[in-house]
Image (cartoon, rainbow, N blue to C red; front, side):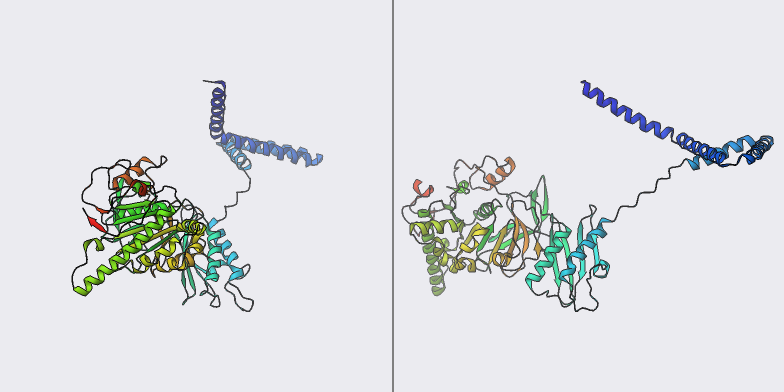
Length: 528
């Protein structure tokens, strides 16, 4: 044992011994302080006594002591009285510490004071919110958790407040979120009829759900998982080391879907490419997939050469060729369906098999095409977006949130299913989601966390299942194995024998796999 450890143990032993000695000799120390106080009072009294009265005083004291000594148990009673008075005089007379203020009351008062400038009018004779007023007049109920954080609040506001204007609402929501705490998300429920606002803190969504087969019908895909109050549906999922039931955000695609195409936006590193991988793994068992990586980062390399994946393009030339093929394929499927309806027969099987086009970062492709004087890839999406629902063609477009203004109006109009991952400015929510957001985002957003809106439904929170790139060396082993288990082949680096699968004629060449497609893909699809 080193000298420093010896000294540390010695200091700890001395501190412990001092604490025990204080507890043991505490009463004696109190009596000693009292006796010293009695002695000081006696000396002070004797010094202040006139000399002509000191003799009678001494005589009186001697007479009292003699009387006490002659009484039965007199000395013992005198000693007890002396010890009792000494203990009383030696007690700790330090003023008691003031009780700590209630933090919940302070927080509510701070929220009330911060809302006052926005909810008071100078012409109001009896304002509900006033400087120096009591928050209990405006706040109906509130609740705090064990850590002292606000979990629920119900407040009233004056009738002249413009609660129908989004900017006025956003200002009040921002103030409450700032005072209540930015570390959590809050949902704001406005009741315009009774002038009430209800604020509820939302529990964090689970982030440990990885890619796995989900219990859904054909044509349904799970975008992520949300709160139990946002949906009535629950599905079993593997979470951690066990199985639980979680509420999913289910997107229904196909001919009867009201929102057949999806636009996903997100900040850097928040999981838009993860979302595309998750969708591809869910639909590959019953669909054909075409992937275009506009950024050319290789995020979707694990899908190259997989059964059901026609191609994964990373170059501008190959992307334009694939988009032209998708356009012709959509038109071919439409013609086949129209012919089947006119003749009363069934459409060919290859025209009813779903086709998914996953387009990642189209804004970068558009800029590159503009620089090289080639057609804009987004213009080639018009036919699949307009007729994709009838032709069993689903288009998913993913891009950065700051590239929203570079996405063509045609794409934004046709993609009625929206999903935004990462931090979202409330002012940008109507443009990104198509509706105002009644949830204030948290200051910390984990990857894959965002908001989804399907059709005319209100936005809901969503957590995308963890579906990382299995070829990335930094991917955790459990998540890599979960993704590899869902790929059509058993290993992400080798191709195993596969059963019957849809292929295109002629077979895919090595140049096409690297993104260098020399000619548009043929429009004939058959089953081997």
